[in-house]
Image (cartoon, rainbow, N blue to C red; front, side):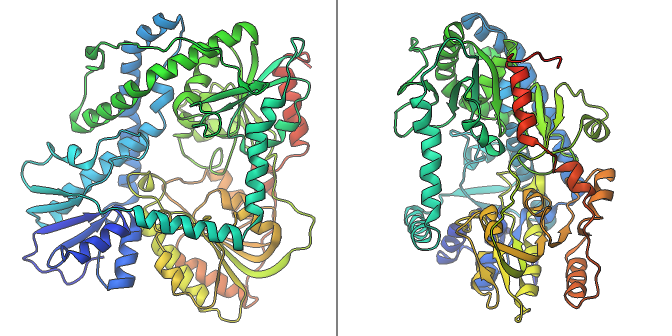
Amino acid sequence: MLRNIDDMIKTGIILHSVIQADDCIRNNLHAGNLLFSTHYSVDVYLREKYSIDCQCLSELWNTDEVIAYKKTASQRVDHILQALDSRIAPVINHELTLKMRYFTPLYSYLGKYCYCGYSFFISSINKIIEKYNLDKIIVYNARSNTFFANASDLEKVLSDLFDNIKIVVVSSPDVAGNKLKKIKQIVENIIFKNPLYVFDRIVDLYYKEIMPRLKVFNNIKSNILLIENLYDLKFLKNALSQYNVFHFLPKVDRFWGKRDLLLGRGWKNIFSPTSPRHLTIPPHLFDIPLTGNLDQIFVTDIKADFLTNINHYLEDLGSLKSLQGKWPVSLAIWGNSPITGLKALVVEYLRSAGIPVMGSQHGALFGDAYEPWHFDSDFNRCDFFVSYGFTEEDLRRLYPDRDIKMKVLPFGASSPNRSARVKTPIDILFPLTNSLSSFEGGMVRALPDRLAEAQILLLEYLDSLADLDIYIKPFMFSGDHNSAVMPVLQRMKNVKIIDYMSLNSFLRKYHPRVILVEFPSSPLYDALHLDSEIFLLDNPIIPYDKNALEQLQKLVHYCHDVSEIITKLDLFLKGGLKKKRDQSFYHHYMFKDNTQGNILSLIDKLAGRIDPST
């Protein structure tokens, strides 16, 4: 928090990155002014390097306010997208003789993050104006959201919103040199610390880019579409020889020169060439009733994104429609949420055409915790959802007011992190959760300042345990852009920092006696099967279901604040805390027998190879 504030200070400066913080100090903009940030890495950096106070805007918010804003954003985005689809989808569908939506699949999930980013930022400015009686704000420029390529910058967003205070938007410093530095660091880490990473990427490239082109189809087999990234369903790439398997790669293809690829017949993209689309959407169709400036900013950005991309989306959807006449897809499968671009529209098109779509869980906090946006990312984008273990009954208990349309198949995680190799024992592992700015969704999953301060307290406690073998595991190739605590890590003396391998790779090599999890997410699921003591910090923004929490507390030491974790861990290290090994949560929400066999049997039923009634 800010300290020793002079009553005469009237100017606030808003920073978004460490690079901007250095620029601010170099140009002496900070002198006599209040500093604020949208990413907590700025606060930690200024405090550690310059002993200068900066206040992350998230500090102005409490949990109840965040939950209320998430609800409001969800309602407004749903309303806007439904209105746009009702006016514009019929025009597009007439062009291609389709019957699908466009705005809802493209923007219902990321749009909510985007809307919340606007909302939190603008509301935070109002909060600091009122709290500190500011008469001027200097804002370093940035894109107002990171989800759309042509999103408005902050200068445009703020220009018409504040007429009672002077707002000055300054250019962000050049970051080219910093990018080269990061690339050099990544290359050095790969070559000298984790050479197997290169081998894994080559193998991944083979399965994604080369193998699909070697397949020769026949007209007897059924056709299945695999939509990358498959995540836990990677095993399907080598398990579906009885089918013609198309591979959809939703990304820019650097090797073959195509935006989005649907591969599977020799070395060529099997999309039939279609004429370029030049659909003209009458501008007045975007004129829907709006409530306030936030709605208008949101519609402006999605309109720009939509009009930039819709013609090539329609071109490729037309190709997919033509493909259906020659090689009709019987089933589509995704392993990670199809929430963006053509990938989202392909899934929407197939479902609108009555072709079943199977999705799969790809992390934690699905059926065990309350996060209704999973309907936008996953549950409403498939007909059959393979869960790690949660059931339809679990979902109905969590969301009694929601219409659950897909069928839940609790088959288990298909890729549990198990290894028969002898592992190196260590005392404590702390896998750090990454940090996000308020423009990237940092506010809606956990308050960034509270998450980072919890990490700092735990890191300083762990570094005081000089006689233990302790490993800190940030995200791979971490930097200030995805970790708020880099300066703190640099002054650690007694812990080892491993940022050049994934958590799963680490757990295949080491066996920790204790694992700390400061944010309930996928690292928790990665650790549940281990013979390790797990200490977990709760997150009230995404709370656990009561039944799930009762089971989880039998397996992990569930703590409400950092001091409780430190007290319990200290007690455990002294032999005064009983181990927890009740597996009821793990066996309900994570592990099932014959996971891969059950998934393959489901595919056979859905693709029509065997009688679905059996």
